[in-house]
Image (cartoon, rainbow, N blue to C red; front, side):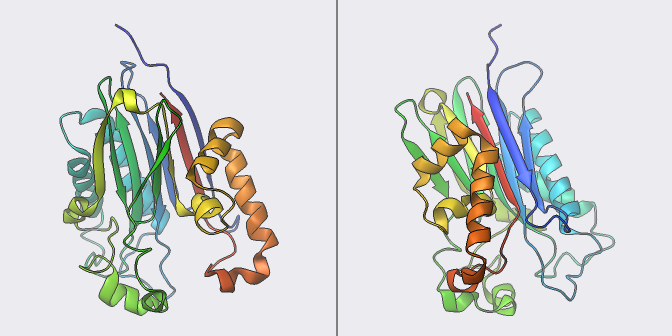
Amino acid sequence: MQTDRVRTDLVSEPGDAARPNEDFAGVGLPACGQGGCVIALDGVTPPSGGAGCLHSVPWFTARLGGALTELTVSGRDLTLPEILARAIRRTAEAHADTCDLSHPRTPQATVAVARWSAAEVEYLVLSDAALLLRGPDGVVTPVLDDRLARLPRSALASDALIDARLRNKEGGFFTAAADPAVAARAVTGVLPRRAVRELAALTDGATRWTEMFREGDWTALFDVVAKEGARSLVERVRELEAADRERRAFLGRGKTHDDATVVYARL
């Protein structure tokens, strides 16, 4: 039986050493040596004042990410939206008896998942995580859920407004929280395995290099990860954040540093 030869690289770094990392990163490579997956989650930091839940965002992302990794590898008969829905339901059941899961700020996360087999590559993106796919011709295709980016800046000025009118609502944007139905809102697709040679899942703390600081396009960002390593991209972002500390309000950055995660695989 022929097995895959896959090279992976993973970095997940907190934005603040004094705070726990709210991201989750995972790579699944089955023992049979055929197929695998990469996963990146970005936990949504709630404002102060409570969110109806006894648990932290890292607690939530660890459980949702763990369920996603296990189901993505073992549930070959399930689609990625079905897997995300099951992972959300499993995570919700773990704290439904103690927490108000209907609260708009119940722990939640953005999601990027890719799974490959001998025949195809499947992908799923929900909210502002990113998935980059590079073909044998070197072309990089970004898979993005741009609903949050398309909202007018005025609509994002208030956390209360985001919760009440935009978060997990029609006309707004969607994150993985407690409702499994949100999985149907994800950006999904399937490509032939031969069409994808490399891929990377990133949280928005890492994609700042392209999306916020405009240091290069998605191809240039992918080149940094593939040639220099995932750590190099995060270090570059940190240098840019530190140099631009005084202008972060002008750029729309609520915090100088953000948790940053990069998960890379060469198939």
